[in-house]
Every structure is written in C-alpha cells, then in structure tokens.
Length: 250
Length: 312
Image (tube, rainbow over all chains, first blue to last red; front, top):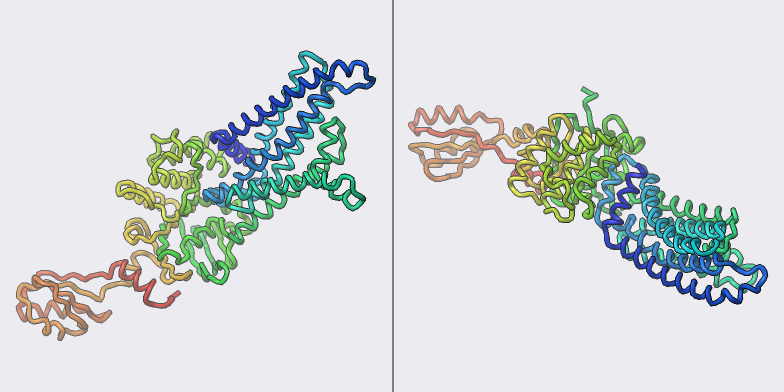
C-alpha cells in the first residue's frame, strides 16, 4: 500500500521535467564546487606535508562539499515537497486516496517515502564525487560515510517538514515558500544564537544545522540521530492529523 | 431481505458554516438497484455522495455500507465502494494503464487480479485502444470513461458516480447508460445528475433533493404513478363545443389542441374514461383516440423542487 503510493509519486516525479532539471542543476553546481575544492586542495597540499596531524582530503574536499550540499538540500526540498499534497488537492486527485481503503498514515508514509527516495538519490550522487578521489588517494571512509548519513538525515527531516506544509494549502507555490521560510529560519537559528549567552542554547539545539555540523565533520552522535528522527516524526505526525482533519473541515 | 441491504444511511447531516448542505436525510439501497439522485445545482447531491464515499466526514448520522460502518471500520467499508467524483481523480502525467494499475494497488488487488480487473474494466468502458496514452492528452469524454473504469475496477458492490455522463458525446452517452444499467444488475449504483432523461434511461429508483433535504424517494415506477394522470387526451371525429366536455363528471378544465383533439384535466380518482366513452357513443362524437397523459418527470421535478415545501 505504502509502496504503491511511493511508486506513483516516483513515477510522477520523473515524468515531469522538474525532477530531471533539479537533478541536473544540483549535480552541475556541486561538480563545479567539487572541482574548485580539489584545486584548492592541490594548492594547499605542499604546505600540508610538513604539518603534524594535517587534515586529509576527506576533511578538505568531502566535508566542505557536503556542507554546500546541505545548503542545496535546503533549497531543493521545498521544490519537491510542494507538490505532495497541494498538487493533489488542486487537481482534486486526493479524492481517490480518500475513497480508497487506506488510512492517513499510509498516505503520508507513502508520499514521504517517494520524495525521500528522490532526495536520497541526489545525496548519493553528491557522495559519489569525493568517492571518485579514492582512485588517486586514500579516503577516510568513516568520515565520508558519516557525512553522507548527515545529509541523508537532513534530507529526511526537511522532507517531513515540507510534506506537512504541503497539506496545509492547495497552492504548491505557497507550500514551497512556507517550507523554504521554515527551513531557513531553523537553519539561521543556529547562527543567530552564536556568541550569545545561555538563553540561546535552546535555539541552537533546535536548529538542524547544529546537529548536521558534527556529522559532516565525521562525528557520529546518537543525540543528533535522535534529533532528526524526532524532527521527522513530529512533522509526519502533524501531517497525519491534518489529513484526518481535512475530511472534517474541507 | 435484510442481508441484501447494501447501503443504509441514517439521519445524515453536513453543514458548511451556517449553511446546511445536507440536512437529516435517511435512505437505504439494495443490491440490484440503480438509484438516481436528482436535484438542482447546490441541492446537496455531491455532498451526500462525498460522505457516502468517505471523502467527507458527516457532522451527524450514520452510514453503513455492506454491513460495515463507514466511520468505525473505514477500510472494510471503503473496499466495497467505487467512487467517481464530479471531477475524475486522474493524474494527467500517467498513462491510462498506469493510472488503473495504481488504483488497483490502492484497493489491494494482487498482480494477476489487477491485470484481469484492468482488462475487464477497460473492455467495459471502451478503453482498449488508449491504454498506453497519457491521460492529459485524452479528451474529456475519454477521461470520464477512465474515471468510470477506475470506479468499477475492483468490482465493488457499491458504485457511486457523481454526474457520470458529463462531457460525453451522444454515442458515448448511450454506451455509458447501458453500462450503468448493466452494472445495476449485480451491483448497487448511486448516480447523481440534473438531467431527467438520464434518470428515466438508467435508474430504478429516484431520490430528489432540494436544499439539502429529500423531497421524494421511491421507485421510478412510483414516481410515474404519483404523477398519474389527472389528464386525458382524446380525439373526436365530430367534436361537440368544448363547453359540453366541461359538463362531463369530474372534468375541471378543457384544453383545445386542434384537429379534433382535446386535453381534459380531471380530478384525481375519477374514472372519467367510462363516462366519456358512453357519452361519445350516445352523442356520436366519433371517438378515435383516448389516452391518459402522465405528468412527466420533468413536471414533477419542477413541482417538487421549486414549488412545494419538503415532504420528507
């Protein structure tokens, strides 16, 4: 049931030019940045030789690339999640789901899985670039994997937030705008709280950026994992409630 | 036969703010009935059907479909429903086959069951040639047919069609009406329309709605009988002056139709025919036509939906 919905979502994504364009643009930009980072690394290489405990290629190429990819996800996710429920409400195809013998959780998880599959594909594609350096040099696979996991979790939390906001409106553009606004606000919360006193620790803690940083640098922390899982669960739960409500209000 | 009851609706109500879209309606539907919902735009037909399909939650009342309460056991009840909303819920970017396969999956049909169901539904709705075409590129009539195919795909006992013949050309219209009659033999069908000929062509039962209330519910035959006739059309070879006709027992009004034809309106329950025939023979009126005229559905519809207050 969930997979039927996810597969349909996937199919619709790839039959529209949107998905292909997003993939191409994201991949193109990341490749460019990747090449710049590799170039920088080659300039620095000479000076690094003398240093003790010098940062490796994973720290100087993969980690910054993932950092840029995280920003990319911030912009990419709203464009993908905006369609999830808004588009179905606008095109009145939601009636098919509502009249079928499926509960709201299956609808939400199906759609979530569909869009998440796409986002994770882009994450893996981004991850493959530094992996290509493995032919010429030795990579720290632990750090590389931690970074990839960080991006995947980030994508999962962004997608959950976007999915919820797309249940609130029948206008996909409104859903995209609100999602982008929410994600940016959460992201900035970390920066805004930097350098201030205790009161802002909570804000910093709530920001996905803070939890992502450690992973991107290769630090695996179960608190961060729990943060992302709770973040996603919260928004998916809200989406399920909202769908049940929709039948009452409409 | 109680176990033949397919749908049982009890005191169903739904409000939008202060506006009562559906106001306390109750009815039952048996297997093998085709029930037509008739009413002007905004009478509450679509709202009722959306509630029956489980798309909209009622404010009050109970809906039992195939023995399962739609609110308590939504999945079991919904498995028994095939629903075509006013606007067919189709994904423009999918092909007809993909759309139907998706819908089959949503209704828990397995791989082989789904393939068989698709072939059957496509054959029934005349979609064999367009299986690989994108829905967005199909004409409105074809899209409507895909919507109907989708609604009957999983062979639900109850089929709910909200204005199913919109956008169809006359040939398609005839085919779809025939299909609905055919479906009505072993399913229960509820359809809404504001076209009266459609009801006469397809339905066994009629319900008329007016401002959210049921104003008439019964078999189509009852409806015709209800309108039974208080009118008689006669043709006379040697007609007397109309005033003579007025003197017949129970005649209220005489309308001259020309060519020796008259329409007599009489009080209900009066056996005018016999008196008329006797009179015509004794006075040599040369009676060559005598036919009761039934108030047609349209007349009744207008009468029930506009002029009088609620009956139910």
